[in-house]
Length: 532
Image (cartoon, rainbow, N blue to C red):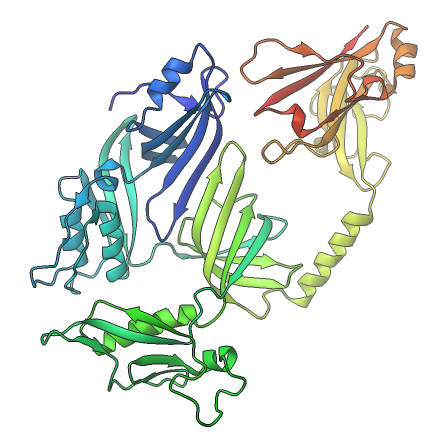
């Protein structure tokens, strides 16, 4: 538990994380963390020491404090990086093999089974929402401690997570948390084009069934129970013999054109799967079978959404509202999986257990949305320039004489600047009429996903009241020897390299510079100077 060193996404000096992904999945309970760190000839030895399999990781991101065990590492000498895969359950549970158990005839609670599985592991039960009035008799195959915990959760219809108490750089407690169901109904809306950057809808009938052949555990006589002679019918789901069937599912998915045709065989047209549940109670077997058939009797849908901004209150298991106005989609869904990359600035969520609604957006809101959409698509936007005596915009004027500050205000719908509100301008000191200010604008903004950079950087030079955007005007103002010089620098390099004036990426005699993915390796800084 000694601190060996640190790596970061934003350290100027030291070991750099160039890729990262944290994954939480409701069905697994274990959180995973993957990353790649870069090394040089000087830092390779220490990088390998830090990332040794079996070492621990304390991960800090804003208020998050997390603890992982490094499970696998891969060193790539060509790319000069090290891949790390880590899990928060740790080797105490991932590698601990528990012997098979055919039981001792004693029924136990969920808490008792978990305490047995984590014995001498260093973990203790933290949050515990299990019902200790419910006892079951469970049998297990030989498996790891983490696998057994998942089996226990499944049998008691609970969910699990792992958490840690961290004091400064020390782990003081390790917890297994047992939930009836993780998460809460947040009421929060995630909208396409606002919090949501894109939605991928996945549909599948791979697990489709319209009926289940149900069996339970062995009773006192050694015979496995079934639904035979059990009575249940709610109008849709009903018991017939050993089977639980769905009328609505059969009407939609029957293999026959006419499910009611004469001389049909038993289960004619039904798509049948088997279902087994550890119980000797027919009522419980039927209830569990209904839950299972509700999942299987229609198309399975998962919604993968790429999130531009995830509200901080949302956690794995929470229920959120997703709105896709263009696709007419308004649904309430549970967050089943969450992948986050700090380096790439991406958050991808997988949603399921959804409830699709007819419409969650009034016609009035739709009309307003269309109006704003048409406005943004057809309107030309302008940048306003003004001058002032100080950084607060006092003495604001459209003329530069005697003014020391230049103000800019972007994305305006009218061409003529409004100088009645100095606070809307961004003020830069230019020291009077003879001062020179060089500004760089990006045609596609300043934020890009991964290294998918595609933009044109354009230079605008302000010299007093003169605006310069081409080489002829530059030479007219500063003389024939004046020119634009572009430079670049990779991450962790100390000095800039000069970009030749003959470089094919330079446009308009250097006043524009075309940047593509080929120009970017993790992080690149471009700068521009006026040489006179």
